[in-house]
Length: 239
Image (cartoon, rainbow, N blue to C red; front, side):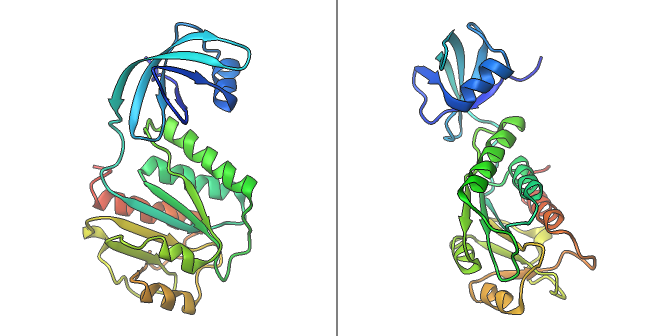
């Protein structure tokens, strides 16, 4: 039996309506109708089982019959910050895989060697990708994608994290034992151009530990997924 279809809604009540893109998808793509059972999500970490009461021209009315805490949310607090990439598909790939791996927060930033630029439409698209990924992997929450227009602001957003990892291609050794990491973790990955020496110094001054990803140079999107996966495994999220 396939999993129930899942929909994000801003506010869920006993009697709830589904509108907008989620409604269009439910009605015109999934062909859901009265009597079908679905899961509603409001990013609170809870899952609301609901029965479709009726389908109208521009909305779907549902009755919530059960409320449960989502069982697939991560225990660990991991925050991924990555430099905005030139290829839109690669940015979407990083967001999608981060959500699947259990990242709780995602930030995108511009830095010294960035050659691509964010706008409102691109940011909206990345948030949509995050929600779709959350549905696919059966999470109850979708991390909001936040954009920072310079590296210092991005690094500052990780204040309070117990472990701060700064992936640096010119680092000769890791200043943090990622294999035995514990507690909350912030991960920083650069864009295609990587980081400058000055940016590494800035990160070091803000409490980040430079880490190496081995002797081979990885593509930015590979580095983001690889380091996030290692961190998640070390924290017990993939065991």
